[in-house]
Image (tube, rainbow, N blue to C red; front, side, top):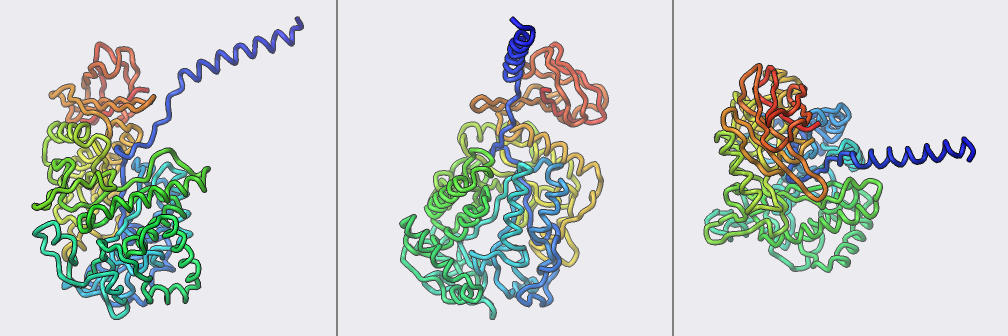
Length: 546
């Protein structure tokens, strides 16, 4: 045999062995798990002004109450922060933004000062984006860039109501909305077939009667040169789904277009308990169909096999309710009606519990009664006047409890830099919606803390979706273990530890001889006799296998 042939055979044999070895030892890619997501919630207008040319539209130039007008934040501003890596450093893997659809052109006096629809919850036209927030081209770029960073985009869906009626904004026809009575919140029915507040027309979501597109919308579409396209698109939707041309299905169609056209990954659903629950079951079907169409038409842009995600705002629901919300005269299981998850409104109160009490309670419920579903926790938000730490005196503790709690974590923009929640001159929820501060807030160490914990959560689905087990009470050490299919993830975490030298028991989570890294300090160590010896300047340890 020639030397060259022998060399080739030996090379191929060696290559096969090497390939087999590398294939065998390859670490599975960390999957994205919705139940463990690290969400960043943005009031779009208040985050970052990336395009000053869109700050004024529809003559929205009247004086307003403190923090009740448009301040300039837009999609371009979110894109800028994506490009800068701001969300990457925080370990964010989902960005949720307030509604982007076209808002009423004028505003209203709510008794707290004249107010424009900067918050996005006063819809005029679901089929358009509001120019104050940006263009559909901006949205397409945002989704594409976010996906390139491994970040999902979740928008906000409002089907329950339109925006208020003003001299500039017509009321929807009477076969679309009701303008009375006002809800009394005494029973299931008095949450639903009524208006939430005065002058907030309630969509007749219970109706299955065929109605026409309102004249003011068709006139608007004709002026914009898209009437034929919009009507043809509606024709396709109703023919394909078989749904009646009822108000709720028009709105579902318009909202699903943002999935089908741009590939958004989820919806947070506003005022979910103010419609009958079957509305959301139908909406989930429409969203799932649109998401499947997007994936089919954009195979190169598909991130993974995760389905479309829906999380509901069932105001007052908390994890202790498990599967049901109780109206007093009726209990409703929203998880069986279109929702993957629900917002947990009591976390900001239960965060007062000690670590073990909090973590073990949440893990037990999520791993049993809510198995296959999840909750989204928060310590502050855009409309909760009782945050966990209103004066921002416990920002380290807030980050630790929120980002290490089982379930989804929702960071509200500025939590990570102690953005003030009390603003001189502001009234009511305006206090919660101040402009983002682009500094390190009270201390650069606070931002670093949120970044380290956020990255650890992002890198380890076990933190949010795994089973919690206390290893030791003094020092306080616990494990989280998650497995699905061929993927498994294990971490050991210690809190309230002594500074300097510390011994961290690992039980059987990491075998003796395992090399581990403390993601908080960056130091490494080897597991010996069921524990790890570390010397760090911090009272927290985040152990991961290297």
